[in-house]
Length: 113
Image (tube, rainbow, N blue to C red; front, side, top):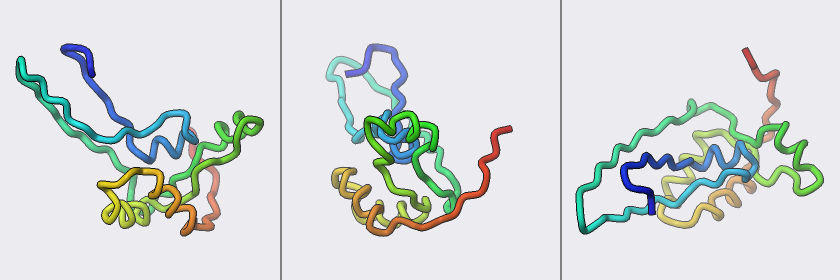
């Protein structure tokens, strides 16, 4: 359980993919305390619907000895369409389903400044 008077930040599936599994998205769960009140504020930050989500190349290169790119490359809108039908199920089948529809997208240079 979270520490008293703390802020909890839950990472979403896209950050799990971008970090190639280094950080895991969490299953949403609510723990209500019987001895007090609780305040929850949901704030979502999503990429554009045409954003291509994939593991960061530098993380894949660093982890090449341990494991390769674990997650598929996909367009965010395609993932959200799949998520709408599977949102109350475990996340692993969603990633597996995205592998089946992995998009062959050529990526230009990534802006860094």
